[in-house]
Length: 405
Image (cartoon, rainbow, N blue to C red; front, side, top):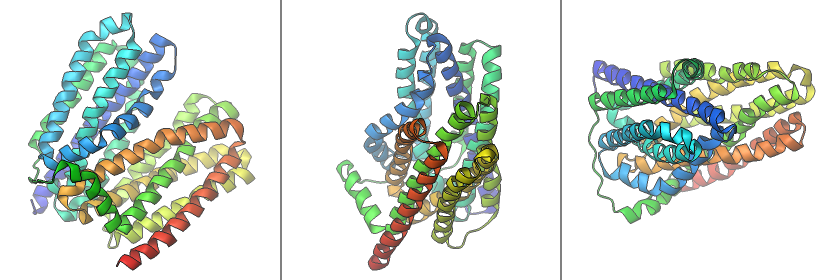
């Protein structure tokens, strides 16, 4: 797998897998939300994935990490996708009856099960990156996967809106089944280097703690990344709230501004895939620090130039997308390089679950703040708090890291 041609072919297969899987899932999720809104008249459907995913992830994270690290990851990914196809097929069969009885309850059960399958697939695939390409191509593969998800995100919403208005929902379920079958096929033909881990199940939690304590650099990066993810929710919640409810623009304007995030990810992904980073940790820390400062500048800009709110949001959605694409692939690459393959499942599950858990927490925090406080003040306070915590983490854990060295 060391030769260039083989690695490029692996990149092509893995990238295509990511785009097809993400596109199908995004179209289906959005269409299901629209259907729930239409049938129930409640916006609760839009929040189903936001809250169910993290809850399922938290409950099952010990099991997922054990399975992913114990068994061949390619097999885990394929079995997870087959289970998802079966789940979708059952949903397709019972859908006509569910519409007449209680679609919301059936959808919650389906989303819960499908989240389990999707999580097994995502974690096993992320943990398998060193088994798919050689070390020199890790960053490129991570960048391609990040960019692929962004491209799927750009295309999914308009496609889902168009398809939803043109065909019956049963056919949308069928489209999702087809994309998952294609994902299975692409995973089967992608080469994975085998790994074997005989670690006892009860040692998983202890091992994860040892890994994090033994690598303070990783702990430091993880803490800052999670903090920034939480802070970024201010834009996720704040942009539509301010644009629609405060400035009284249409949801189309809000959607257009938010779509710049995905465009930024594509632009940043193209850059990070083309460059080689000599010192990954230094690069990530500088990028995280710069983004923390950018969040403070966002709050200051909105406080002093409130009448230019739309322009400020446009600029910062683009910056957010570019920063995400520049930082996520190197972080994954660093984890994949410093963590032994047999422990990657534990670390990836931990990172994945923690990131998702912070999303609903951020939604609750910032939804409450925006409802009670003037939006420039919310962004300003958020920026100040983030920068203070980032400085403390960098200084305190930086000293501990040096002491351990």
